[in-house]
Image (tube, rainbow, N blue to C red; front, side, top):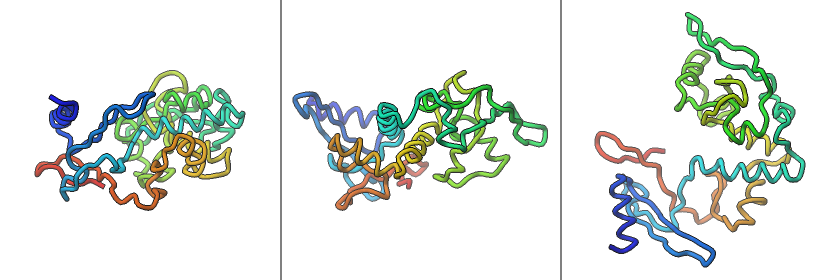
Length: 229
């Protein structure tokens, strides 16, 4: 079985609509192959040049940008991040819910720092991961997806006391914007994407011209795979 066949078999076994695999080392590209569909409903083939959403890999890129600013002294790892982002000053911890469903909060024992945000020890979560966050939003009103309200929430625990996957890196992006005076796309484009030659990496609204072949997110349904946007 060739490397391409092995890759395709793995994609089939994982029941993925399509995928692109690439192996690169110091000598260059050792393997690159695309198979399956980028848009399962439309039958659009996945190609090596298809632009795909990288989802939470954005966190790694934003983290690089933040650490650059730590190196230049524009951000501090262990200073209260509320000095940069007033919305995160005096954070509240969710301790439970009253009989009427209202959230019960208390002041956090310590401030949130950039280190907490970068290591997901801030206490911030995700509504689709932690049921407490979802229940909180159901009590106070579900925010619009992608809005600042959708990443504004009480903490699940005191900063530094535990680990929870959540919206911490969204706030890191806002911290980058606050200290640089520019938007996150511009900063990452100039200081991360550009120097690394990642010329087709961008937030959706800032994709370069000619980026027509964009992978459509697919989800499984009772009738098969359908596009999910």
